Image (cartoon, rainbow, N blue to C red; front, side, top):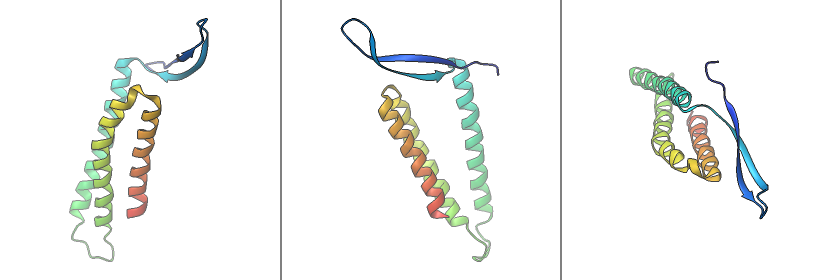
Length: 119
């Protein structure tokens, strides 16, 4: 690997003597590596969604016996909508750990349900 992740502990509560009572840790990458990973994954996901939209548009005139294009298009549209709304909220909630986990879980729940329920 080009970049090694590092483990960082964050102290959330100390007693009157300066000893940590509560803390949490997480694995982090350097900023340039994190940006490279996010941009690469975002480009791959956006490319896959664009390709799926293109294939759904080409297959819109297939007979109804074989056509699932409408449900696939609805699932992709809901994933795109959740991404446009949820990712900025996720970025804004990155300082609050509980809010970040809640928003991330909601994004995952809605995208998976849109795929499973509409198809």
